[in-house]
Image (cartoon, rainbow, N blue to C red; front, side):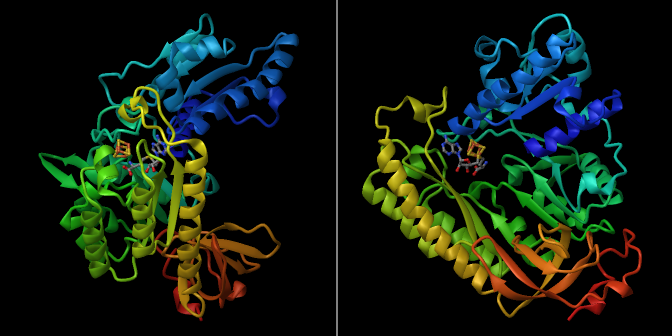
Length: 454
Ligand code: SAH
Ligand code: SF4
């Protein structure tokens, strides 16, 4: 979501006459858009600020200024304190205040500004439409925030405090933004929200669920692929599970974090479901879409987690057999209930548990990728690869696929015969004839190459 927010900030700045600087010496304004989810992410801000301050001081010696703004959740959580630790910062703002950037920057010319009050208005009603006609900026695969904030209050998590209360954007706004993204070259849209499946946006006097919204967006011509992230198991409704079977444009992959396999820990985390509930949902999803690729987040070393409770997490990870997963050592976050408890797990135990879990997860990810060898997958090409004459695209399951191709096939979907599988990517051959490619337009984008494929 920070990637999405940064793009919206760039839209605001472009509308106000800013352009991307070519060298550090030319920079008038730096915005660091930050993440507070774990301590490591937050600490990155200060090392980056220290590095950039050398450029600021060099500009100052030449009589020029370089304004430093800190946005995102570290700004929200630390507010004024951030100015004590980094007094050379000019503006601190939260994730719900950046629509006021022009006014805030004006004020920051004369005094240090901290703007972290949650405003009464929604920023979405005040953001300019993206003016970019440059398809390489929007990208073939674009993000679109539909829901923000969270009311679930998991005991380890800062999000409800930094992003604020749950908010769903209106259906019309989302449709408008989706159409603009497609006009700018997007073929795939990932719908974003901290708890995206809690979505309940208004459509006139009706309210639509995420499943309803997906059905609606799937009707947009030129949009070929839809994904959504991140979901909470408690909000995975029947209609959303059914959509995975019914909507062809909804890709067969789902990030459904479980965090732990132990019911006692899940309860202490306030996740409001058991391991069994989660497995039942997985079975229902697999019944609706048998090839669905599941991914998850895990936290190891939550306060009070015993060896046997961690074993339950390992057992769940083995049982579900994830296509992909992220796993983290528990990081106490200031102001959250879990950070206050006395039973913090020692760092060396957390590290050992993380290594054990990651080896299980890496094995199932490699096994999943290996099942792709010998299959032909429709790949949506996104960008050139690192090597000459190589293109990179995504499979329906979300893996990167490397293909040797001299033609620029960005934005096209073509079949690729998978020949190799690695832990994090696939490689294969495509039968695209570069000489037979006709110019791409929105409605043609996805259909034209299919007919030529292997
Ligand atoms: N809304 C999503 C998760 C958003 S945060 C959900 O409910 O699942 C992304 C991930 O960061 C979480 O799934 C969790 O695994 C991890 N995370 C959040 N807070 C954390 C903390 N205090 N320590 C370690 N990992 C954390
Ligand atoms: Fe954080 Fe997700 Fe829990 Fe909300 S549902 S509190 S975002 S982990």
